[in-house]
Length: 196
View 1: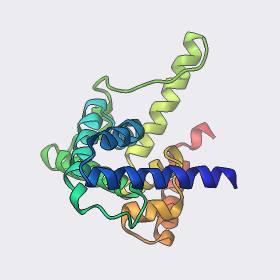
View 2: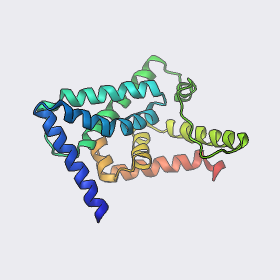
View 3: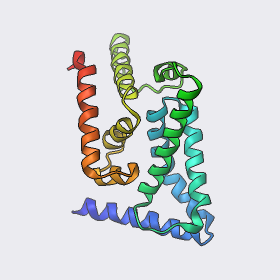
């Protein structure tokens, strides 16, 4: 119960900060930016598989938040609104990439050298390579999911959002989110069966 109370306080704090931004307090916007910039960039990176593009899209998302400050109403969580903007920007970027380079895959984009690899401690070179191969396989499998499924998986697994929050971000029902996630996880299980 204490975790829920802390989470509600943080969410209320976000709404309060955004209301102050609406009233012209730019320092409150800086606090929101500080608090949410990294999670948004991480989400966008997982969507577009390119660190530089993720940072540009995150900047655009926060710019849109700032431009919309005068019309802000705390009818939903601030993060729902923010992630909806970020998700739409990612979808638009992906769609634009597909139309410009119809045969280029997201795997080619991630091969540009902007990927991050996490390793714990000092493992052997062999275990690092095996770990990287598995991570790349997972990333590739996720990147091949349809856009909405990919977004739902990333929000669910990496951002740990609840179904209701994902539904509001994607503009669909909770049952549609569950269906998206079910289909996505079935597809991932089939593609990654060799690692089970």
